[in-house]
Image (cartoon, rainbow, N blue to C red; front, side, top):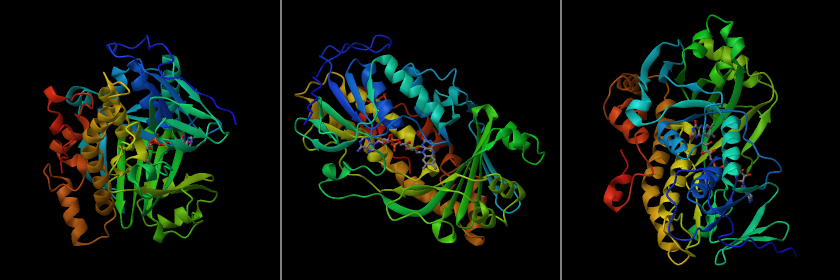
Length: 449
Ligand SMILES: Cc1cc2nc3c(=O)[nH]c(=O)nc-3n(C[C@H](O)[C@H](O)[C@H](O)COP(=O)(O)OP(=O)(O)OC[C@H]3O[C@@H](n4cnc5c(N)ncnc54)[C@H](O)[C@@H]3O)c2cc1C
């Protein structure tokens, strides 16, 4: 058996950040998972001078071909940690636009205004692979050791160490487990199995060439006016927005699985490639012309995903006091709040702050703080994702009419999270590094319901 021991406190602190050098010796963190969550945790910890090793099972690094949104609460942390998005192709969002599914009339606009001014950061719409590439490059530039082909098959929680499929073990002071929605490690934190719950919805994720849309007078505005457009209809909604400065239009068809007859996902399968868009075209045949065109433009070879969430993962800090869960592993959520990766970014920020001044002897308290600060906010977002699922998918009738009327009002009755300015400020204005005894730690994570 190969035994590869990586010593604690093995490398020198990052030199190109602006973080205050901690007076305590740096820790060695072993991060499991090089997804967006794992990389952000690695960057945040390395920024403070800790030595970090990241292990991922994949043979090469990357993200799926799809869009995602980076809201201001996440953007401001990226900016602070020196993650430069200048050279990444991106689109600045106008805000959220809700449309009637059958005739396309605008039910409500929820503009972001000037998010830099109001919330301290931009609201970006990007290609996931571009974002992941920037994070990976930044992690490496800071001196994070990111390793591919490193599947973790087990853990020694007391060492602590990650046990790899090749028989080797990687030890450190702290394990940061960011192994995603299907986390194998979650069970060890909870003391019982806690598999993610199938929400009954699936999503089809498609990238349409922007050029095809710019040349069509009906479609052009979807590119040139960069809203996140959401068409809400019975048992389905469609979200679309331009990424890479309009080179690509990202579309997600979110549908109750019971209303689709195409290739089924196997029991534990999370995603598969669909080769024929006939079923999708048929499913949206009665929707307004732009949605029909988007369905037709999907072509072949697009992704079908099963959507999972969980109400609440109770334990993010392992009883050993030497491991934490982070990202989708700790708070799998429906994508309807567009906040899963942003929550992982906030996790990374709070973990970073919690570990400042921590030593192996005080680690258990530090990671309990991380758990305590992060859980209420992340679980509020998980609940809101579920509420949006119900609100988005109403059949036509009195409830839907009530929903549409409420969508235009800036108050708590607005069923869309961003429709109420106070809630929006709670979500986007949040600074995950602004907490602590002197800064009202107790109120930091309180949910805005
Ligand atoms: C349709 C859709 C749209 C979304 N849109 C947005 C959005 O607009 N904005 C937003 O903020 N969020 C969005 N999200 C959520 C976001 O994508 C996730 O929250 C985020 O990507 C989770 O990152 P993660 O690093 O926690 O997990 P993952 O990305 O799943 O990464 C886990 C990593 O762990 C590795 N791994 C797993 N097991 C092992 C093992 N045993 N050994 C070694 N490595 C392992 C995997 O290979 C993978 O690289 C969306 C999600 C969906 C489904």
